[in-house]
Every structure is written in structure tokens, then in C-alpha cells.
Length: 484
Image (cartoon, rainbow, N blue to C red):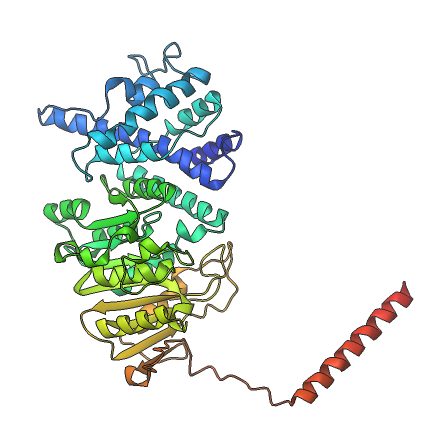
């Protein structure tokens, strides 16, 4: 129902000089979508308060409510073109009045958990990039066609928004920051199996894919009581995100999935000294795909016992510290972590094996993450007991993956099935911890079922064969020239 509207919005944004990429489309449509959602949300709250004969106080002052500036209507429900802003007047209002007003909520809010603070944080960190007020008017008109009222409408909008995030993730070389394949996320959650009442955390939240899928998983896990539903909304899902765009996308994504006031904090997770993490800060479950390849500054590295510039390794230390005893973690990491010979890698693998039970390692094929050929693995571990046996699963999908042939849930069915009993197969095997080299703690993926064929030729034979091939190549070129 709303798919054409989303397409129309992107087509309009494409025409504006201020928007040039999928990232811009997502960012600019997100703040407008957020304000339309807020208007529908407030109306729903007002109706409920009226039925219960309670007083209702809207979050926004009248002048800044959607119905006062975006779409002004007459008493009979028709658009009042005499009062509606457009062109330069609309752009001036949005840039000079609306954004400053909304950003002021960050300082007014009583605490980080309130909707007011989220509004202030979002509008403090972005700006209206649309340069043409008439283009802005066209986008607003399209967004006004969307309704966030029924569960069916919210479900459709969340699916469309997920597709937008996916397109954004594929648009640039840093796509993995915004989009982790949903079939992979769902499979990780099935293995970790979070329970109602447990706290779930992602310290590199991105577009909040792990949190929204965990929310959906828990909603379907059993028949929830009213108090359990409230707990799921308020004190179950937590996240931290450093980058402004990802923070905004994550907030919007959670809202569209029905989480009304997401517990996402906008800051750098790695700025927290992990020695300061106390029992009250710890969580039951961690699900994450932290950024890798970054080079963190020395002052950030000082927050960690194992000093390294590799972002993912700092996140892994943070996650180990953040887990409660008995807590479980599913984390995506570059496969080179398993075998790198630098001191930090060795020390971190040693810590992981000694403090946690690494009960599964999923080896993913290149291309699992769209837009990148980087090879990754998923580490599954439980804190509070040392590793005694490693169970590996090497995912072999039997095809080259790409944008039109991406990872799907069927690809991961065998892994999920075998993980329950850690059965040995052509794609899975176990390694006793006593067989791990205690000098390097190398955890490389070496499938014993794959026999490496050795080249028995001598160096002289190889050189001779190369010379023969060169001669053959030269003869073919000569024949082609003679034909011409």
C-alpha cells in the first residue's frame, strides 16, 4: 500500500541538489518520517486520554506540530492552501525555527530515556539538506499519505524502511556499518535464544537490526503478559551508537517496529573505561556486528587492558566485560582475528577461551555481506566458564553471492539444526581445547574434510610448463595477426 509512496519520496529527493546518495535519501526522509510518526503517536495518546477522561499534554508546542506547519487542514479535513507553507517560506521555517526548537529538547529533557531527549538528540545532530523548499513541500505531501496507526500499517512501513536501510548499506564501501543481512541476524538470535526478562545489548547498534529482530523474536516466543510486554518495551533492549546517521536510522527503525522510546544512546561505546563497568551495568545477552578495520586513538586504547588500534578487538573486550556471568554473546568479527599473530590478537583469544565458553564458530563465505568481500566469522560464547571444545561450522552455500543472490534463511538452516547437538558433518567439526597451541591460541578455520591437494612438481618442471604456455600464447597471437 505504501511502497509507491516510498518510491515517490526517493524520486523527489533525487531531484534536489542537497541529496546525492542513498545515505542522504535515508537521512532526509527519516527526520520527516519521524515527525509524521510523532504526530500520529500523539493523536493516539490524546484519544486514549480522552476516553479515560485524563488530561493530555502534547510533547510539541502547537506551532511546531505537524498539523500546524506541514499539512494544515480546514475543519472539514481539506488542505488549507492559504495557511500551508511552501517554497522559501517553508525552508526558512524548517531551518530557522523548527530545527532549533526541536534540538532544544536535548537540554530540557529530564533524562536520556525520554522521548523528549530522543527528539532533541536527533535534531541536534542533523540538518535539513534539502535546498529547494518546493522539493521539501513535495516530500512532506508524500509522507503525509503514510499512517502509523494500525499494526498492519506499522508492519508494512517497517518492512519498507528495512529495504531502504538495505539499499543504503549497499550504496557505499561502509555498507556493513548500516546493514547486517537479516537472515544472519535471525540465525544468530536463534542460537543465542534470548528469554523474556533478559536484557539485550548492542554496543555498535547501527540501524538496530539486532535489536528489532530480538524484539520480534521475543514477541513470538510465548504468549506475553501485559507486564512482560511493558518490560519488553521499556527495559529489555539497549544500544549505543557513535555515528549520527546510524543513530537516527536506528531510532526510526525501532520506532517503526513498535518500540516507542528506544533505549539507544548516542555516544562512542569505546570511550568507556571497561574497568568502570559494574555489575549493575552488565547484561544477559549481547548481539552485535561491531565495525572492524578502524584505527582507534591512543586515549581510547587506554580504556582497555589489551592495547590495540583495531576497533573490533576493543569492542570484543568491552563485550566480555559487559556480560553477566552466564550471559551469552553472538558477535560478527573479521576471520583474521582467529589467526593473527600480533600480541593483541593472541592475548584476546587467550582471554576469550579462558573466561568464556566459545561454544560455536560460524565461518561465513565471502560475499555474505553485500558490497564487501571481507571474510567474517560469528563467535558464539557464554561467559563464566572456560572453553573445553570448539565446534566449527563452515557455511557453504554453493553459489557466488551478490545483490541479486544474497544470503537467505535456508542457507543457514543446516547450521542451526546441527548446532543444537554440535553434530559432525562435512561442514562441521570439533576441536578439543587441549589441541590448541598455547603460544599462539590459533583458532583458524581448518575443515578436516577438505583435503588440500599438494603440488608434487619440482620447481624446474613448473618453470618449464610456464615457458611452454608462454610459447603457445605467442604462437596464437601470431596466427591472429596473420588472419588480420
